[in-house]
Image (cartoon, rainbow, N blue to C red; front, side, top):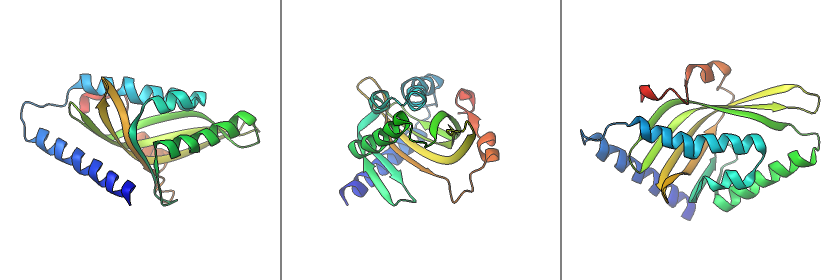
Length: 184
């Protein structure tokens, strides 16, 4: 219950921040903020997944981080998420015949940012390589909330869903690349 209350608080706080900035004509979406977010969150997240590096991955997470798994009906805090990812990384390192993440790419449908908060929705693609060398693609939609902390951006909440397999390569292709900042 405490985690659900925290998640509700985060979403309401972000909504209030975005709404107050939308009413302020001097607060424009600034490309510099999106570039900072790419540098502090998206580039290290992708690099950590590719390298199976838990230390790099947890470094970008807020202490208040929440991971929502809708189909497992789970909400994990930072520690629980780190333990879950560590198990996945250990399985990959032991080479027990399970697919290993090879690459992850993010594309965006929406990026809303203020000086202190960001809300981003998009599609990500995982590419796995099996023990037989075969590639497998997994596509999911995501919603990530980030917050400026300690002089940089930290990921605050991560929700993703394959939407009952409705997310496709076409869905991914239709979203905008991470460096397509001018649209926002």
